[in-house]
Length: 154
Image 1 (cartoon, rainbow, N blue to C red):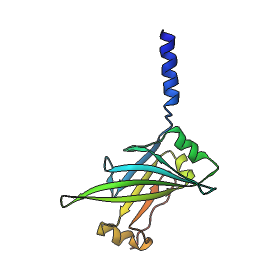
Image 2 (cartoon, rainbow, N blue to C red):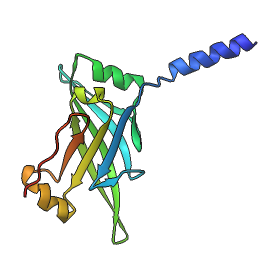
Image 3 (cartoon, helix red, strand yellow):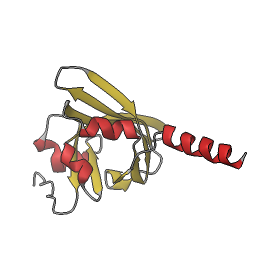
């Protein structure tokens, strides 16, 4: 009986598909994201033009990825990877949302840690500081060991 339970447990753990999580911190407008995001996906575009969207999780410090996400990241067929999520804020007692799409290169997934800085141009401070660098409503920057920094407009 005990052997059956052990076998069932091992089979259940293997089939649950847990992969390695990515050490990643996300901040929006210099504030750590703790619970303000939802609908986090990794969007994959393949060389043959097909697209796939995989739901992922996020806890401060960890991007929660299952094994199938890692398989797609490491696949030779994957050409483009985009992290997308919806960010919620409150302004004058009204909920505001913004959807961010962050293109990620494959080498970023090999870093010991990542810090994703997103600057939302709904805030005047960041629109003035970084608005000249893009036509989008936001800009992003990754920090990682031996990585660079985002240069402001002035």
